[in-house]
Image (tube, one colour):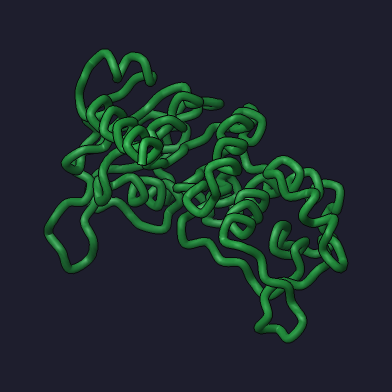
Amino acid sequence: SFCYPGSERLVLDHVNLKCKVGEKIAMVGRNGAGKTTMVRLLCRLYEPTKGQILLNGIDIWKYDYREYTRIFAPVFQNFAILSLSIAENVAFEKNADENKIWNALQRVGLKERMDRMPEGIHTLLNHDNGEGVDVSGGEAQKIAIARALYKDAPFVILDEPTAALDPMAEAEIYENFNDLVQDKTSIYISHRMSSCRFCDRIVVFQNERITEEGTHEELLDKNGEYAALFHAQAEYYRESALA
């Protein structure tokens, strides 16, 4: 369970979830349901108000912080693109492996765009450094995903990774989802129900708890919260297409 400092309202209330190695989990639910809070607890950005989070049966707060955070490659909604080169924004390390950087950029669909940059992956980003190049919101989001791929951690967290992408780029990310995360354990947070079909298990957050779990088809058959969200979204897209 978790509540923010100075508040008595639980954002997560007796949530119990087990992640298996190599499993792809989608977390869905309405705004404020606790999805992002859950992954921030996993990353040790917050500490549980009650209960424990265990890794191989050991409380995660007993692990060395640096060693623990090496396990995770998260892409949060509020990522930052720094006024550094593209390579430095992806790798965040000295003596970076350029082939590995290019591979990460190619997997998110940015290789051709980087080829057109004045100095390739050594092009500086952002105008505030005097000579940098600005990128679009969608391109910045892809760079953030490439950053997670470059880290090559065993646990990938994608929190609304396609929010700034156009529909075509979003579809490309979904279609290549398995290639992006490969055999890694992954948690995928999205408001777009169609993206959940690519995951092994869908976990539905509602009223500070997990209320449903299963595959896309299983949850549609249950006709509960997930089905309501899915059908409401499908109807919205139908109306938008007609308009």
